[in-house]
Amino acid sequence: MWNNFLISLEIMGKGMAGIFVVIGLLTLAVMVMGKFSGQNKEEEKK
Amino acid sequence: MEFLWEGLLQITWQQVVMYLIGILLIYLAIKKDYEPALLLPMGFGAILVNLPLSGVINQNMEGIGVVNGIIEWLFDVGIEASEALPILLFIGIGAMIDFGPLLSMPSMFLFGAGAQFGIFFAISVAVLLGFDLKDAASIGIIGAADGPTSILVSQILHSKYVGAIAVAAYSYMALVPIIQPFAIRLVTTKKERKIRMDYTPGTVSKSMRIAFPILTTFLVGLVSPQSVALVGFLMFGNLIRECGVLGTLSDTAQNVLANLITLLLGLTISFSMRAEAFVNIDTLLIMLIGLIAFIFDSIGGVLLAKFLNLFRKKKINPMIGAAGISAFPMSARVVQKMALEEDSGNIILMHAIGANVSGQIASVIAGGLIIGLVSAYL
Image (cartoon, rainbow over all chains, first blue to last red; front, side, top):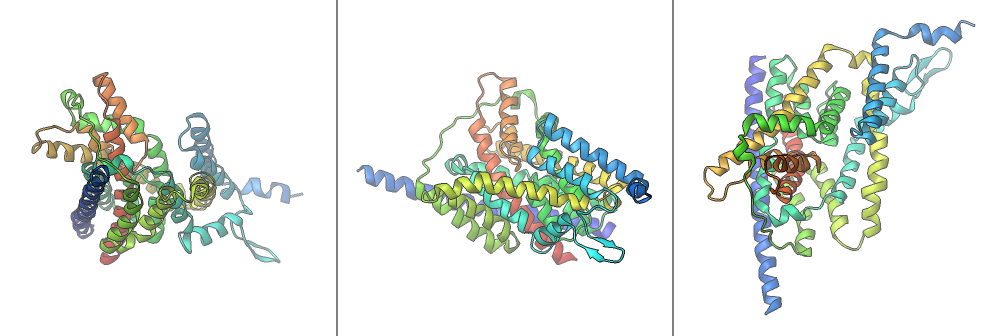
């Protein structure tokens, strides 16, 4: 059981890190898309 | 005339318990409106599969041999062989989700990640309570606050507790308005709950809405390949919604498809609610660990928001963090209601919805990651 508990802590560390990495990438991608679509709209207005 | 009494005489006390559980689920569905689309078929199914010599599960009949039962067949084909039912349900869920509030405030993405902490905390608790790793991981995923993900992960990991996990996941999703205020109050002060937030959303173009599901599938698929079935079908449903040329199909996915599959899923899951598999102390432990998972999801999200506040000039209302669970839109509504209780003019609904929608993506990512991580250790 103790061994499994240590594994569960490893899974916790890797799992939370994995989620934050993926979500971080998505956040960056959406921010970049937002910037481009904002620029496009400004150009269309001009 | 003995055959008339044969069924009655074979009823065990465990089956009687299952009839009562079935009636309780039906009561909660009808009277309390707790996830009725799923709890009602599950409750009725629990009665069907626990009738002695029930014809809805395979029976070995004297002189005839094995006779197939419809619920066992649905379970074999729709869940065990392919996990088709929970995965197909994601098309309907994806078609229901409007990612607009999240795309207009990308910073809300983070809270979806933070509020998955309960999953991993619950896995450790389950291990300490004596469950093996694959069962512990399956139980922990109750904290995803996402019924189909819970069913899918526990089935892929071959957990013997699929029925109890599904009941816990859907019951606690329905109890979010009770569980979350308790958990949030544990880790926030009145002053923090009163924090007001400006709402200045960025622009969200149509092309952005269309690109988002494709990009998400691609990114998540590369980092966590086990999530592809979950995220891919969720995002495919969303693409149908956002593309603008499949309006009828989008309506069908949101209503007819989602309702039909939920109905079948509820009945099918009841196969794992047979008395011999369900009535034991493990089921009670699973219900307890599921509750812990939900509480620590909320606490994880709130603590992340409080941590971010250490570095921010404009403070975030930490309750937004708790809205990062997948139970949509209940969690966002709960957070907004709590904000109004503390300060009648405090509107944080759009932030909460953004975090809540992020939770739907994060929970399926968590499901995929757990499958990958646990299988690596088995």
